[in-house]
Structures are given as C-alpha cells and as structure tokens.
Length: 119
Image (cartoon, rainbow, N blue to C red; front, side, top):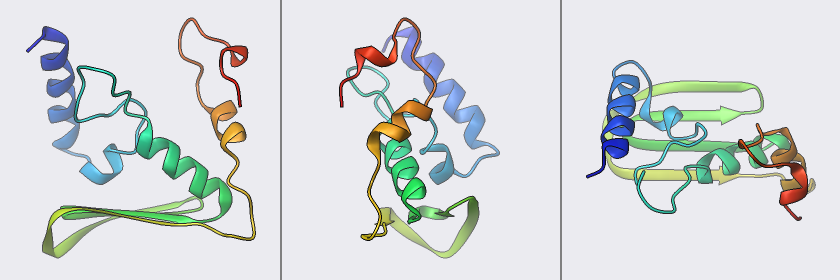
C-alpha cells in the first residue's frame, strides 16, 4: 500500500474517533478506495443535489445514521445496528435536480476552471 493511502486512512481514523461515519462519508473527497479512480464525490453530489431540490437523504450503517433535510442534519445512533449500509434518497418530483448549479457552488479543484466541465 502506498504512503498516500496510509496517510488518508490515518486521517479517516482520526476523524472517525469523533465524527458520525455516515456524515463523514458525504464530505468532499472521502472514499473507501483512496487509490485508483475513486474521487469520493458520489455521496456529496447526491446530498447536494437532493438538498438543493428540497428532498432528503438518509444514510444508515452499523449503529450510526444521518438524516439530512434542507439545512437540518441530524446524527443519530441506532439501537439495533444495521449490518450493512442503507442509503435512502427522496427528492421532489415537482422541482428539477439542478446538477450544474450544484457543481457551480462546489470549490474548484486546483488547476481547473468552470470551462473545463461541460453540462
């Protein structure tokens, strides 16, 4: 394993000592596969699109859960741990899912500009 992978895993381990793992999974760049082509933006994108739309996203894994709706996010502990990971996404069908607006509000990766991304 490369030193970068060990560094990333160490950073996650430290964060998980105090953070809810389901909430942490929705942060930019968090991935369970730090080597390769996994950017760690999938759940961040899902969360941002759904919340922009007025919907809701819930992630449950083991004994932790996060319930996000609009500006409110609640971390909870489950009394009966879920033996896997469950992701529930609910969006409003009377409103658009605005991918471009969500991407435009994200921080720009170093060395890129908005013209590099076509929608």
